[in-house]
Length: 120
Image 1: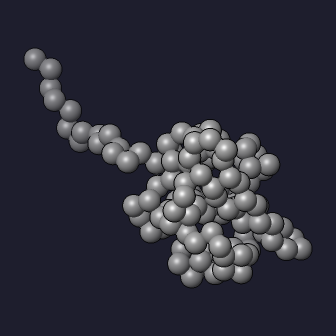
Image 2: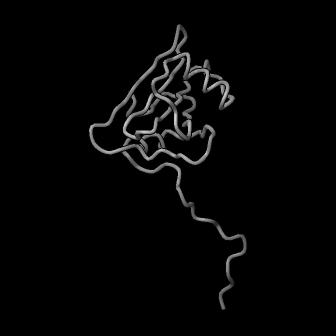
Image 3: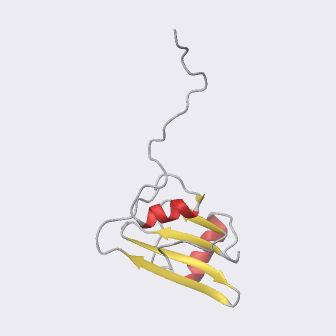
């Protein structure tokens, strides 16, 4: 389920570090209070990562309760954005890239020039 990302209305990355010892109540409180998002939003997947980048937790509200998922990689690490303290919405394609170990949010994004140089 955590590899394909199909069927989710929204997917959010909680950037920065999260204490993964927290359970459902603690993680939903972080989503609500720190990121100002609704943890009860149906078909919305919230992804959180701790200091060790080889494991993540995912929180998903279903009609009758929460589904808490935990993924630990045997080899490698997730390229998790650590700089900002916000939740970033990503697409299903970016989600699949993240699950494959690729970088989703560029650390040094390419800046687009406002006025490109004129050719002579």
